[in-house]
Image 1 (tube, rainbow, N blue to C red):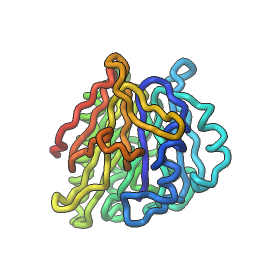
Image 2 (image 1 turned 90 degrees about the vertical axis):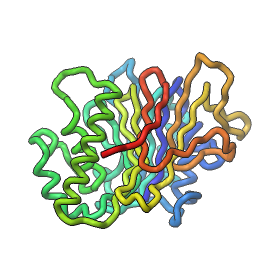
Image 3 (image 1 turned 120 degrees about the vertical axis):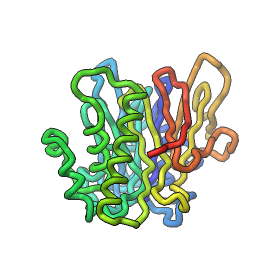
Length: 285
């Protein structure tokens, strides 16, 4: 599987999340704590927004392990953003290539995934038959992740109407429903695990989900406070100013300050709204 993080709040330099915490995402690329196989070395990606320049995100993808990429180490302290996603990959479906690396992007949307779709190769053709020509032609890679993102985009109204956190959540539930229907139609009993994050640079959605209710989905946490700070090697989510809001969604807690992190219940959706309020609700599809 993979590890990821999503950030929304006041602009922050990326290295404060990618490198500085005790359990930083780059550390998780070679020594993840909360999965049996600690290595996530099949490439990485970051996607971030500079809305004063362009509402669409910038994306940097590499097939190198995150721990061994000098370019990432160089640019992380120099890039500051109020919304960004980062992902370190352990490949399941698809070769190690930039086209298979997360986050995937379409227009102003970014998407990343930790998990796998059971029986993906069996349902792949039928899934693609559900896509419009524009979304079908957009797909560049081979992964189950990118194809699920395509289902989401197909469900989302991209015809000029305003996109809201609520409409994104409805599209995500619709994509989950479409996927379950495909799995049932093809008699797939292999479990599917979908920890996904989607953002348009304003709102963020995240799921902790498994199709088998008897199984625990992969770990997912969220943290909310005034600001995430790293001072002299000590990092934590501060609660100093009620007017300031910062939200993190992570596969693994970045610090050992347990009270800063809230485990997302199984089969729940986390919504980070445009005002940075956070709601957590069951996924019922």
